Image (cartoon, rainbow, N blue to C red; front, top):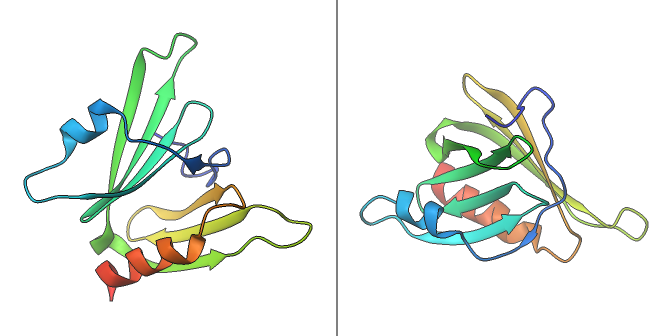
Length: 121
């Protein structure tokens, strides 16, 4: 499982979803956006956020965490600035606590905020 106590993942950049993530989608679930760090990735779907944590030196062991929008109690988006070139998304989940995701400055973080708002509000 991603270390949610640490509450951060390496800066994420837009990417394509891996076939194993696409295979996890349930009937009627759509993939909205995918982001990848060095080895880990995060995928926003029509029903949840899927966090993929590749573990170990060889990367053969992988953890998939499903974070349903229904468990989000609050969220915050922070856009990139002049000197702070990354943007951030903070999510507070019922029973889990705070999860912080950092994205490259080129990511339109407001779109992710809208996706979450559409499913939480």
